[in-house]
Image (cartoon, rainbow, N blue to C red):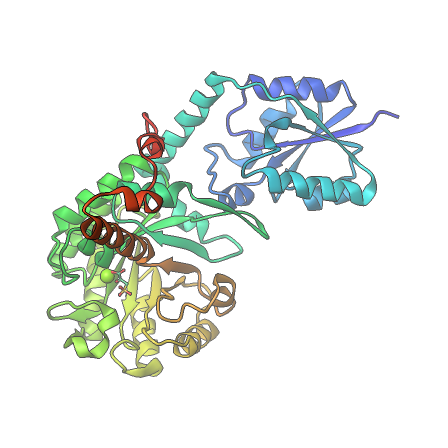
Length: 434
Ligand code: SPV
Ligand code: MG
């Protein structure tokens, strides 16, 4: 009886490399191809331009392919254990780098039933790099970037969002990856924070940085990234201005704006009630949400209402009353903010909100209650977790220390170990981005 040979691909763009590996696999037996499902692709920040059904039917028509099945994870564990193919084939380029853990898992699964891994030598092909680059560039287009936040909200875990305030931090959010227990981990989206955007410009977080300037920051980040963007829209400003702002954000490809129910001279929420800030009336804030929603043209763009009741010490009941009203006014999500060191009040809000509303996305910003993991937050119903200010908080003390050390020594030798080598800086940014 012929052996069964398994390989998995994402099949968004089929190229000569795929045909070659399928031909070689067919020499070993009957080829079954696992095509990553749309959900699995999203989970790893891949967004095929063609649906699973179309990708699967293209692969099915390739000579030598006997069967095509959907796979739900990179390591194909479930599918391997149910199919038990004699052989799994793969290029040998996954022995190192971010896919090495996936390889280890496949080997572990194969050893559970006596399957074998055959690795073909990988030959680098610059045409394939170009194809990859072109499809990545596509993801940066407004109509491809904008809907991806909603797509991500369908995932099993909370959407993981990191702040970015310029091109460089955008690149860090775009490409940082680590090996986690559940596979490769990376950020799903970017938060353009008013605090870090203002701080990076040396300005206070009081809505002093104007809309045009905020859009410049977004554009700078968009030029070098592909991941979806959530904008911190502060109070949203005047209702009449907010309508215009929503149109602009949607047009350039932002996925969501979060506006907070504050009035008066804005102060950062982490100052709490001492900032002298008032909270908007429910009626006025609902009118702002409705006006914003009237400007939205696509089903993709989200207006998320941020509730400041806990920050202003008005309690969970007030926050829940507001949440109900904002959702009824059309808000596509609710952000509940808190500056408490413990997650108790946020969890109480989330649990009570979820008991009456199972679907409206909930956003949390665990800056002060940072003991909580994404998994714990998710178990209380949070759908989006935002790390709101960490990259700038990391950079500032590092830069200050270098400045002090140079001043103290009257030369820069002592900061060698604190700085990235010049050779690395000049190669940090690829000559052609994306
Ligand atoms: C920001 O990042 O600017 C925010 C979140 O609004 S917070 O600073 O926690 O208020
Ligand atoms: Mg802010």
